[in-house]
Image (cartoon, rainbow over all chains, first blue to last red):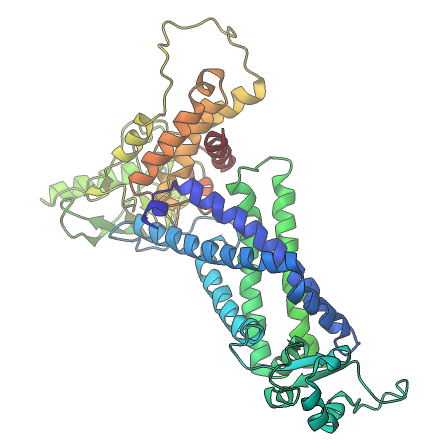
Length: 278
Length: 246
């Protein structure tokens, strides 16, 4: 780490910018998947997307890259910020600076910290459930029922069938059986036996439950707005740090940065608003 | 015009400073900001008070010697001028004016409003030059340079090294100054030869001296008395990346 502190300021900033660009692409993908929740299909599309993201080998490799990216981005930002605070010297200004600056550029560390808090909450609610560290809700697909231990199946047959029963009485489904038993608690999951591993976390129902809590939904929205402000500066700033400044294209990049920040805000923000209203 | 001045007074580099209040009356709107301080100093000397120390030299906006952080703006509230070019008509009668020195770890206060800006000289010494002997004045257009590059290099060369960019930046970053020097040379054939070595050496020295890291806020560009654009910072970044990769 001490060695890394000695890297040139520009090297650190370029690293920060490249990683930031990667994270911005990730955000777009994540927001796109989240939007599947709004389709009125009982979470079918969202589950399919979550299943793909949770099981695809390439995505799993990217998961590690993503973690490394987040950690390096956060550590670098903190190192740079501490250097920046120290650079002002022992005495600061009495009158706060009134220079015209680019929108959102002065608060990056603070909006960044809010995004970090968001990330922490998000990991607790979703990612750690996937890793089995936090208890959540689970789902089992009907096709995986034959993976249940024979003895267990015989013993708990009635209860397991009950979990797959379509309580909303879908008339199109003659037997009233759902393709997925979802929103299962840990106790219900225990009915499938100790050796049963073909279950997945039920992010769809977990998200709906969280968003049905108004306080949670509002905090989520506030933190998403912080993310928007962070991205507002981040997009154009990354181009500038990478040396891509051109009299013709820079105004377009700045405008696109604003569009991107608002787009991400709407894509993430519409979901809690939707669940609060409908 | 009458003003209330709140001026930072500090007897020496190691001494703790504080703001002193000086009311000043009957100032002409056509008086320059530095002339206004001259008038204040005359009155202070007459009273037997130590006059306020401040940097100044040419008083026509080309030497880069004057400084002062006035009411939250380096070189005061007007744009693209130095403090010596600022006139009191830019203020309202009865205003309270806060006058502070540049604040940066790399620019320690020497006395009152005077700061030590040798850090900029050290950065230039690290590579802000070309090693070739220049000899006599060459013939015009002996070395072909495109109009665009000549103009951009000239824009960068307008930097007077006053340090307003550092003073304005929330990170006390010297990137606008360093980039002006790097960009000036990198746009000219004479400077291109040592461009890779220069950018790395100057950035290294800038970091060593304790300047902050640029976060592209654009405050430097807004306050630069010579209107130097942050596109030069992007040019420095390009030069730096190419130097590291190449």
